[in-house]
Amino acid sequence: MLFLWLPAPLAIFTGLYLFKNVSAAFVLFYCGVCLLIPFIDLMVIQGRKPIECLRYLGFRKFRGAILISFFSGAVLCFLIYYFFVLLQERIMNLETTGEVLKTWNIDRRSILWLVPVMVIANSLVEEVYWRGYIFLKLRETVSPLATIFLSSLFYASYHLLTTGALFSLNYALLCTSAVFAAGVFWAWIRYKTNSILVPLITHFFADLGVMLVYIRYFSS
Image (cartoon, rainbow, N blue to C red; front, side, top):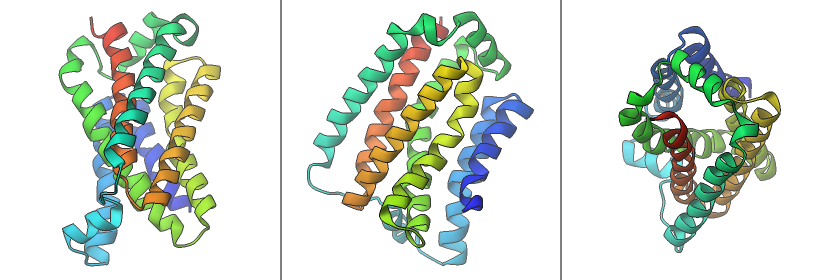
């Protein structure tokens, strides 16, 4: 269980707090954790073909997926954006948060690559890893309820490293709790449908909401 949880926060901590570079964090987390670990296990050790890996990880269609995904995703995007807009003064000090972002090599020019990476790449690799690979590895040893809870807890854990640096502790805990709740919802959908399609599309919208906040306050 420890092996399933530790690589993600270690990658984020190393990239953001030791290297102080968000690009390093992305490479370590996306490539070193979310893609390399499943690749080694599924394709190298187990010898699965690429199409078999995709089906195993949950790339399956089911009826009503698109409608559910876009409706829930749009609602989530709206809630995230307006949560920060309405409570901005209480959640973060723009100057302090901006300085933290600069120490991670994120400035107004970063919008050209940060938005597509966060909305598309981040959503994709996180779902492949947490609701795909980790979900199924947990499912081999624990109950469905424990799988949903643990996969969501592991998923939320490293978000405290980022939110804790950007916001006050209370709101960092609140944001991390919201990430955990989203993880529970996505893991439950994963369990009920045997697909990561809804979590994936909904995750796109959630990250879009976060990036809209970034564009509004830190890209000009």
